[in-house]
Amino acid sequence: MYRVAIIEGDGIGPEVVNAALHVLNKVVARYALNIEFIKVEAGDAAVKKYGVAVPEDSWRIIKSCDVILKGPVGESAGDVVVKIRRGLDLYANIRPSKAFPGVKALNPNIDLVIVRENTEDVYVRAEYILPNDVSIAIRVISKKASQRIARKAFEIARNRRKKVTVVHKANVLTITDGLFRSMTYEVKKEYPDVDIDEMYIDAAVMDIVRKPERFDVIVTTNLYGDILSDLAAYVSGSIGLASSANIGDEKAMFEPIHGAAFDIAGKGIANPTAMILSAAWMLKWLGEKSHSERYVEAGKSIERAVEITLAEGKKLTPDLGGNATTIEFTEAIASKI
Ligand code: ATP
Ligand code: MG
Image 1 (cartoon, rainbow, N blue to C red):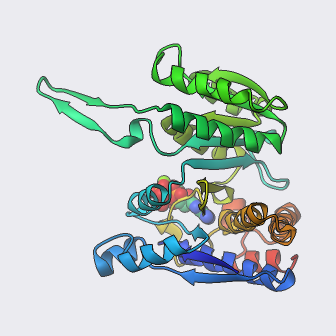
Image 2 (cartoon, helix red, strand yellow):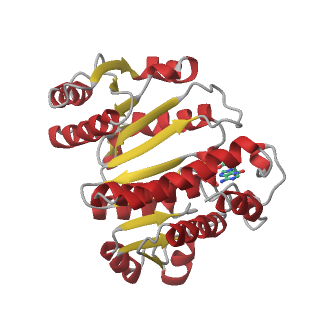
């Protein structure tokens, strides 16, 4: 029996999370999965009610669950994500970007995964003001964190096109990026079946737009990864399509990359694809972790249903050029399970 913590989030969060739950319930029945979904309060609504983004009760439940499925959070997004990432040591942020047949992409050849280190770099937020009107930020890159993120990247590449590109700027940041780069090359020795190459961050942004097919798995530091993954999502189509995972050694959290989109909240037109694909990925992760083929198959069946629905193009939400509601689009997906 798996226990899944569900964070509905804010804005369009409850709409897309309920869409994902609708599809999940369908595969739970179809594949006889043994899963309990537990809704926990977190985000802006929790701040209003309790004064904190992740109340103690919610945190206790989250810690006790196997995995977290999280909708987009509004103002308090940073607080929720940081608390969970740090608290559960979810050190790898993984974001695939792939163009879907039937969806207009800036470059339809994109099919890559960005593996972003999630715990260090300038995001440790050690910023200081010096007396002479100068401000500084400390950048942390450690051997241990660089090695473990590299390992994640090679593991993922092994099941794909078997190539890892380490993206850095070690020609300028010779010590910090230099360490990250050399750790990636060191870990590569454990993966003789996977190729490695490297690219400067400034060259990488150009190629993600111009010739994204040259990338399979990109491994990079926190800040570069943050920027690159939004770019890659944009190149692959709508922001409403991209899902992501925060993964540690034991636990994981799956979420769409888009935000709470307050401008369209409550209108019933949000695109639930990213959220539904996050749920599919969660099932696959549970299945791979426990070697349970049924869970992997259930996840894949959701992915196929999404792909077919997008390719048919009959029931699409407005962001994809259609006029279907969130519920109609979700029903079209659920009916294909
Ligand atoms: P954040 O501050 O976290 O970035 P946001 O509210 O700005 O959150 P974004 O994810 O940046 O939201 O999205 C920007 C815009 O893209 C939204 O205002 C919305 O119009 C559109 N959008 C985002 N997600 C979706 C979605 N799932 N379906 C349809 N439109 C979306
Ligand atoms: Mg935004």
